[in-house]
Amino acid sequence: MRANQMHNESPGKDADGARRSWADRFTFDRVKVLIVGRGPVRKEAIDIFAGLGTLPSGILLSEKEWTGSEFFQRGLKPYDLHYMAGLVAFRDDARIAQVECLRPKGKGRFSSRDLDTLRKFEPHFRRALQLNQKFWDTLSQHTAAIQILDTLKLGVILVDATCLPVYLNHYAEEILGEGTVIFLREQRLATTADHESQMLNDYLQGAASTGNGTGM
Image 1 (spheres, rainbow, N blue to C red):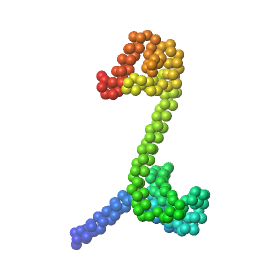
Image 2: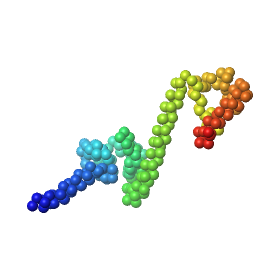
Image 3: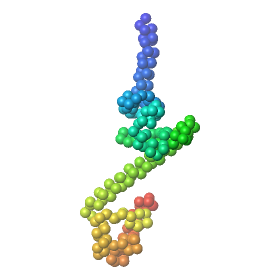
């Protein structure tokens, strides 16, 4: 009797565990939300879904409510624009980027074919924004590094693979500007003694080769 009870209880426990596991893995990333409501109710629904990790893919408005909104009156009507279709191309915890398409009332509503075409461009918009964000992140890191180098009380000169200087910090600019020890000659580093200039060039060439993976 006990064995049968245990046998009968096991599937239920397994099913409960499977349901809990599914619930733990569930996210709203791919859930499409259409909000139908007025005023505060609509705003409250948007906030709730935003807290769950998604944003509405559509908000249904009456013609009267749409044309009476401040956004329409101030942002669209002065430019003879009436219909709007768009998508969320990028979103993180602090930012959101949307792509919007607008057209005059005389051109008619966006068709299903228009919306399908817009959806096809969604991954390309998202990729473009991601690349743009990476570019600005890299630029910010570069700017921060340059600012740090400019605070150093020693000369810093960065050269490219051909040994041409591409960056001088503030202290290095002062040293080269004096021209008493090291300076720029035809865009290359040189010293007041020719044999020392050759030695300097050899050192730089060796460092560049090492950086390129071809040196010792």
